[in-house]
Image 1 (cartoon, one colour):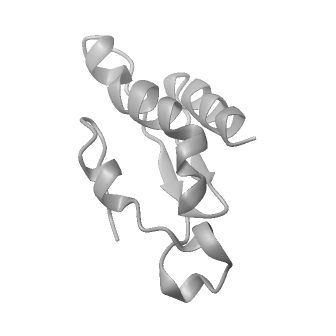
Image 2 (tube, rainbow, N blue to C red; image 1 turned 135 degrees about the horizontal axis):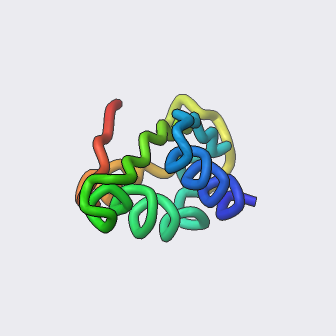
Amino acid sequence: AESGIGGLALGLAVTGFRPVMEIQFLGFVYEVFDEVAGQIARTRFRSGGTKPAPVTIRTPFGGGVHTPELHADNLEGILAQSPGLKVVI
């Protein structure tokens, strides 16, 4: 499901929309990481600036999430190292 959300967001973004993706927990970003870091974040560069992909990704994380096991992962460091992404906490 997360990969589908990422692909849909990219398609909408390159056609002029400004989609907001909502991933249920940051721990699920592994499931959509290729779309986010490999596609969405690099589309502007790969197209020579002709196809911007303005996508906002919203997801809860950390201790305040109150969910079991991996749903409280803090993976913002991984995302912050991906070229083309801006991480806001």
